[in-house]
Image (cartoon, rainbow, N blue to C red; front, side, top):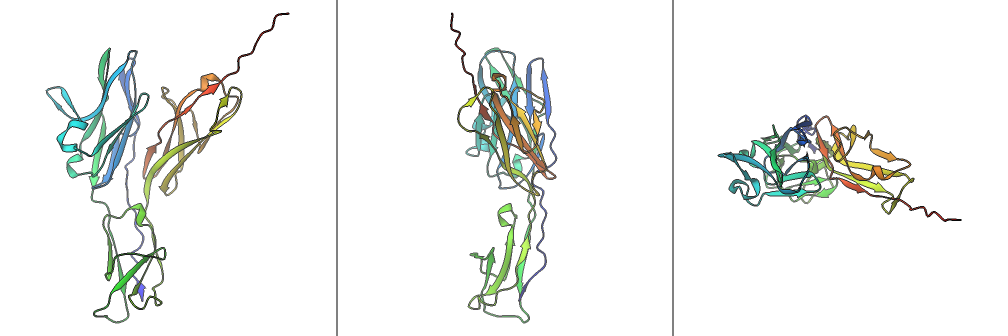
Length: 296
């Protein structure tokens, strides 16, 4: 008994992305990704940072429709009801769309309003949807069996599917692993394992800070970036909010002899051949000691 050899799969989850900084004067929006390719039915995130001369932000939102120069907030757009979430943290905004549909393949723009004006970042983020790749695993025997039930295993764990063929459509990163099959009732005669490989761009990117307790001026701090990707992330880039130029590269960013000027919010960008992904930002707050002066 053997499993067919169609067991290696490559799937592109995200297209190459280009960071873009656009604005007039001190008004600007920096999109972390200018184009995204995603699977229908999946979830996608797109984010940006924004700057403005002064004042207080009163509204932030994403839109796709601009009716009579009046952009429609996705939160109240009937085409996205119940599928949109915003995450806003200090001049950085993330849009999450769930249950992606064919009609979602449009350009998304970010707009913010302050007590001193309003600004829309162009050209925006272009979202393209695909059905995704599929794979079929078929359990075969040396002779045709009639009236028997086939069972499947992934990483030696029994799957609920009980058919001669196992269809994965669309395939996802969770489907990767070692597969084997058997005839129900003859589980001891299991087929050899075949490996299914799924490739994808970075996701679940996060940053940890060490030490995580109080950070005193003059001490050292290490920021470490982690991400799920296959093949593994081959490029890490560190950014400090409000600055457009990268601060460092590499999975870890070590700040020695830290000063109050190093205080701020940091995030990392991860990249492999299939895409890029940014972490949420973490705060680094540097405490300083006041030195008392005693008169003699």
